[in-house]
Image (cartoon, rainbow, N blue to C red):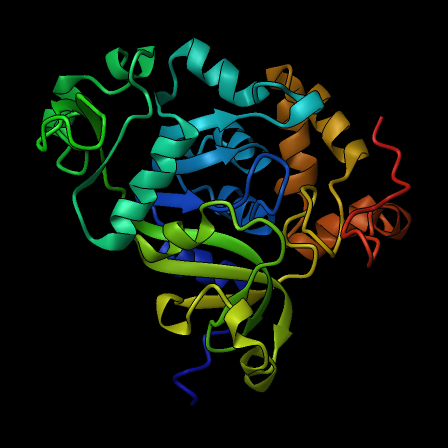
Length: 324
């Protein structure tokens, strides 16, 4: 057995590293490179009570909420552009009080993942000064006292310890994030876990380095020798990764730069299903529980639709896609 070979089936990877109540993060941004195949597998395995951390996410986060998987969420923004300026199941869960949410700015969330990656308890910033982010907490002091994995404070505003140096009288200290598992979809990875993202990486690298375990899903499973060519393009080192899962279209229905665009037809339909409880149950039964894996979901979409979102090799996007 090759101990450096981390390739496994998606259901096995989720079963091994994601369990009820654990702390997870997912990569991507709004409609870009969400690890959707893994999200659907988590819902399919009916994992509950998760504490999710996300920079700015959309479809993946919303479906985890709708699937009843989340108990707590820390996030900067949750939306899918014109399909949902605020994610629909997320919004309903917050309004109903079934989901505990604490919000930060995008930059604050980036710093929190970076602090976790650096192994420091917090990082300072000026982001948030003068805003309600400072005053409004999603998790009460009682919740923090009862849960040893929550920091004692959402954040702290402190005097600049260097006086006037740096032209800042006050600083905001934001706590580090340390997750049990980070789940990220990438364009290319080898069997050892060395991985390459094309286009914007968002905070995926910081999420990976701040997590105890990492599941990578990938469009292409490449030879290690290929990954060693132009190795400066590899952002994720193999020693950070626990599982590699080859899942073509693994970000569908969100976009994966240079491979495919988001699917506007799917997302439009989803926004309709998400409006009402009974419709969303129909959605889950058909598109999540009604299929055994991501390949079967793609079969439901059909070859014609997948072809329509194929990325143009020059731009990295589907240039003639009807986005209405």
